[in-house]
Amino acid sequence: MAKLPECWGHRGASAAFPENTLASFEAAIRDGVEGIESDIHISLDGVVIMFHDPALERTTGSKGLIRERNWYGEDGMDKLLTLKEPKQAIPTFAETVTLLMKSENQHVKFNVDVKVQNDPDRLFYLMHAVISQQPEWETKLAPRILLGLWHPRFIAFAKSRLPYCRRAHIGAGPALARKYFWKDVEVFSMNFAALTSTDGLNFRNECKAAGKQIVVWTVNEPEQMMEAVRWEVDAVLTDVTKKWLDLRAQLQADYDAILSQYGRLFLWTTWRFYLPAVIIRHRITRLYLESIAGPFDLYEPEVTTTATQIQA
Image 1 (spheres, rainbow, N blue to C red):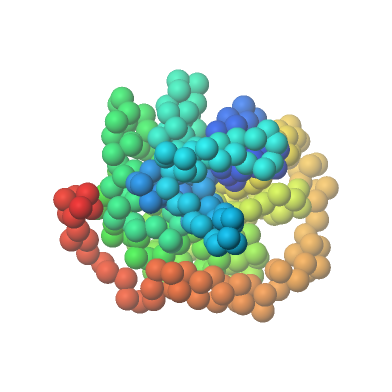
Image 2 (image 1 turned 90 degrees about the horizontal axis):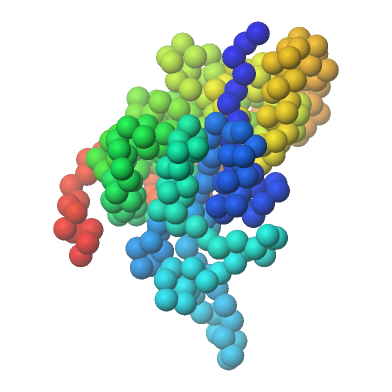
């Protein structure tokens, strides 16, 4: 039997609990995941928070004006609650790290999805400040953190500010992964559709030959989970953590019988897995990332910003 992929909770156990909240993270850990994933942003007042969208809340004032609230403390986002039940507050990076440092949680990996709206130098500086406050952080915390990078501009800053963290590229296509990230990351966190093509197969083989790990996202259907097993990826990123863990337990009990129940016809009956759709998604993703963080080919390879400049 091949080694089965780990289970990483996408924004926690987000199918059952409000995503990117401590309740969601705790639920995923209770389910038995090996890792949790969450998005990260900086608020205007310098608080690193676990939130998918840029740190911004828009409200309409009495005169119909749109007001932006992008700070965390003092009547800021720290008072906001999720719409989804059970209502939860937005957690900070520090609170999430505290959760992961509990003795019963110190086996859990932490995949941080670094959004491109952030200033990488400032973000990684603030993250280091939080990480380095933990007791025995160099051995008990740092090795478990995986920085997920979408844009090559972030690579040099990750190396400079958080050299002890492993790095991953989060992407929608092998072409960008090969050209901009291959030598600087250990892990490729790839959209499931991007790995279904012939080039996806070649990329998976290249990663295996080079000792690079593959995480596939976001996999919620049993048929896709089984395909990820056939691909021998290292981890499945899923909203439905219990579903994958239960299915994995069945595979461990009778691998061949369970795997044979799931065919591969869906790969040819789902339009998102056809090459034109994969190429379009790949191009749209690149255009979006470059519109925010600049052209991939113009990123700065060296970091010269000082801590004093950041604090200023």
